[in-house]
Amino acid sequence: MDRKTEVDVKRQKVRTFLQHHSLAGVLLTRQSSFSWYTAGGDNFVAINSDTGATPILVTGEKDYIIADNIEAPRIQTEEVAGLNFELLQFDWYQPERKEEIIKDLTQGGAIATDAGPLADEFAQLRYSLTESEIERYRWLGKNTADSMSEVCQSLRVGVKESQIAGRLSESLLSEKIVPVVLLVAADDRIEKFRHPLPMERRLVRYAMIVVCARRWGLIVSITRLVHLGKLPEWLRKKHNAVIQVDATLISHTTPGIPVKQIFEKAVNSYKQVGFADEWKLHHQGGATGYGTRDFKAGFDSTQVVQENQAYAWNPSITGTKSEDTVIALPDRPEVITEIQDWPMIQAVGINRPDILQL
Image (cartoon, rainbow, N blue to C red; front, top):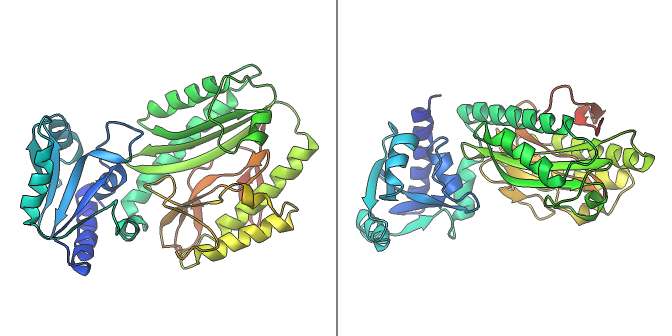
């Protein structure tokens, strides 16, 4: 499927959404929505903003990109050329023109946004990935995994957490992959904090590296652990347990399975491996794709796994964690962030990453 065909498939989905809700249009304001609807385009300037610099207005007849005179040339030339978008431009010093343009195009009719009351329903349009999205996602998973492996193999006593983060960022950005979440912990900080921002701590024995990495709007999540020297028995026990939980989550990530049921099986798995309450200390992950998590799984989840939907589970037991990105293919869950030549352990019939010992 070429890019233009993919965009046409998504146009049909959105126009069906408009008809269902009797809307004159829907305004796509989020970076994730722009990337999804344009089959991999980027409209961000600030990486840390959920909102894109150039919204798309989808009506029943046409698609419009509304951009100021700063963003318009690049968006038109590099992001949507040949995709049948009409670009409407206003001067950056007249921001009020954007609302006027939207009102004129919809003739005062009702519109929705991807960040408004219908946001959750709109997001569901992108849960089931197209063939071409899966191809891009596999590339992203492999290249992110390669960067992670390169950095993990380079670790030595005395390296700072911030230096580890810098090495991984450099490797990813050289492939136009943007780290949107980057966590690094050394030694006891792994036990203390579930979300350890990289600090000045120097590595002595044990490191955890976590990244959510984005390209074409798609995001993969991966965690890896490295120990310098032989693992202590307490860590071996905990890691063997957490990969059992992770394998339980992955093995049940198949189309048609209720997300609530997968979560319940994970909670039961924590109990079976002797760490019954650890699930309470951090969420277990959930659906991904164009968001770090589209939703997190829980006892109250109402979603059902869609065919070709992406998930990133991240079970943790204090001091260790297991995380990869998978796609729920029709016949099996496929791990797209697997690292070649990484030590693996089989659990529930699935290979899961061990702690790398250097």
